[in-house]
Length: 523
Ligand SMILES: [Zn+2]
Image 1: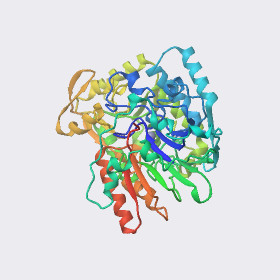
Image 2: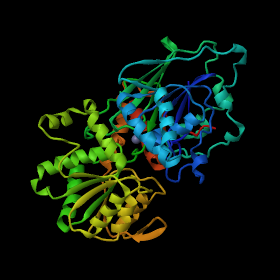
Image 3: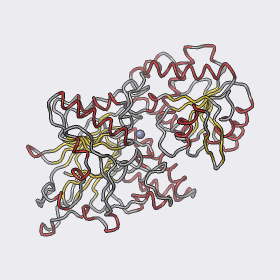
């Protein structure tokens, strides 16, 4: 059982992990889009292209429907992948919305082509229930004489450049495992001893567990083999923080041999929910006091709905807030909000209690949605001029495009307004620049023009829908026996470093062995 990575190695986007079962069989976990300046390729099509063999891929398992986890799916299908696509039932409801949007943005506006592509995807989609084992069918091995170097390990010659090491080793005795030379996978010499060379493929089963990140999100447990030789790999996907609005908290796995762990906030402890709500309230009160707009660059899925849920709670507690307009300026976000309402059975107990009390957490009186582009432009002008307080949520979450850019251009130079970040801002995005330079009176380039940041800038990390450092450590530490290896992916270098050291400290304190490595690009 070998694990390698086709993305989310040097940064947080493009998640795609390969679990190599044997010479002839592999499973992919996620197939996400590269975003920001990651993967350093200027030609968008080339950047997203599937540059790895897929003829041995027997299943694709999706952890959740964020674009950085599913956005390369159209490319995978175009490359000829015809196998099953497994995901949770709520994800299966949300996925077509995400892919339709991805197709419109990256491929075509032709409705007929989009429909055809979605039909292909739907045929391969296999929604599964949480907490239920599913087996993955593997074909009988071809003639055993051909066994040797796995086809996936060989790859195509042009793809075999080695990646430079993202992490230098650090001082701990086990830190040598951060040395990529110790952990790089898929070199034939490394793999020969580990890959099962027998003719019959081992049984493979998987199970989805709630990850508390967005509706439908899951982490994946995969068992390869049976009896004493059985191995369990866990792929965290993106983990949510406990106490996320709307979502039941994730429970760490009982056991694992190897865990591929996200590390987005590996160097950050989140504010608790109470502090987050207080900060949100402060930003809105500023808007209320001087009739400004709170601009929230928000991902369409998850964050927007969490935030709407919290805003409904705040408006419910503050009757004098009835004046404030909450505007969701994104047709896609409006569609997701509708889907979230439909997926009520998967909400947590608190959200159900609000519903029982006669409240509508995701469709309240002050909530407006903006659909057409014309309506959008009117809203931008209206909010920049009027003195009516408003909160506007628009994509993209890192202000790297999308409707939020027009709002920022119209209002970022006016101190009456606020910019509120509720999500992670990747390197090279305008969101990162605003977050970093805004408080120092710096500038940001938007659509090729320079803007001085005079609006107040706030960031609330807890709404990022990502687990904080404590939660990530607990995901591992709550297992009675630590896994043999934790492989860190989906994080900046500093986040990975910090989490790496924390995990080793935890293992040392328990006097258990733990290898902590960083994921290396498939080569
Ligand atoms: Zn995510």
